[in-house]
Image 1 (cartoon, rainbow, N blue to C red):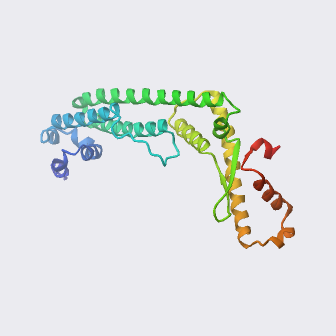
Image 2: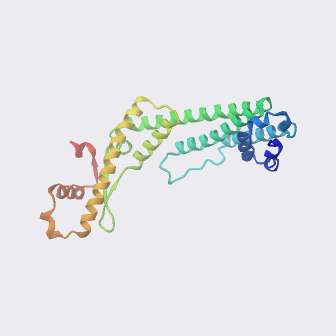
Image 3: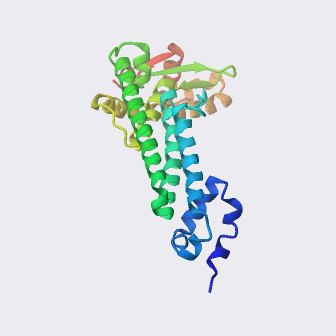
Length: 258
């Protein structure tokens, strides 16, 4: 017969580490409910340690400790904050859920502190989604502006690198808009219908942009082996593409498609 105490030989050594406490509480919830084990462990002390840890998580969210902007991210600063907040929410859910389930009535305070943190983070995420949607609607409210054209994906830019290879630039505003929209949607946060429709259209233009990048890559491959006297041998479509990208730097999809 397995001695319950032996199962917790490591538990007594690691009970000051909240993450390890949670891991072991999740592994041995039924053993904790047995009087023989409960009498050998100071569950009230464990509940207190977890409560302090949970309060520190909520405090770190409230003070925004650890929330830093990553300039290399495809997400906006608001979206980065939401992702960071949801990482804290995940930890809170783990601590409050596993602790309350394993400790029973002793984990009541865990549940209370956890619910407080969950509500704060959900309210924060909903507010960030609303403000991000307002930012997008403000930009889309001026459809002829360069920023609106770039965010909606209606424009595409061509440039030539130092080695004369063709570069197709997908607007960063478009990439950020779509990245934000996808993650907000995955988190169950809602956007106004106008933003949803704009995202669907922008997704379409984004696919066009990626296809153009593939064409440019093919075009660059030919240019590496191409000599001017071979011009008449090129397919007319490829020659036309070369003339288009040589004429100007910015094109609008309505011009190309229609």
